[in-house]
Length: 140
Image 1 (cartoon, rainbow, N blue to C red):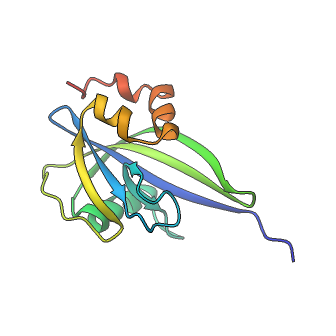
Image 2: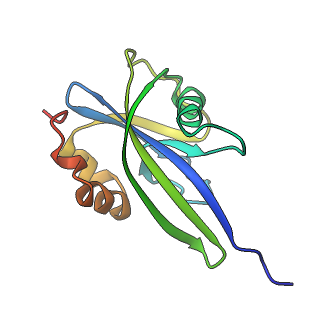
């Protein structure tokens, strides 16, 4: 039986606080990217609004209420020969910085530009560079 091609839409959020961004580390036993560092976000549920999905993901993953400000960039890649992920990355704002991690993640940090370039995956770093995220004024 032939496997059907599938698109998955994922939303991610970049939140700055005092010149640093919030990044989270996936649980080591996660089947996709276990142990890697990333921005908060996840899959959009069927029928869900993109920005609403991102607000939901922030609450579920780190307990933060965010305001979605604007789309920064979109990218896509294949996870398997029949599964392609489309990622929409947004700039967000939060008035609160107190986090409560979900079981999906084992650690978090407010990361400087230099730390982010060291900790994030090469694919995320490439997207950040290509889309001028590392050039944003919010990094101080």
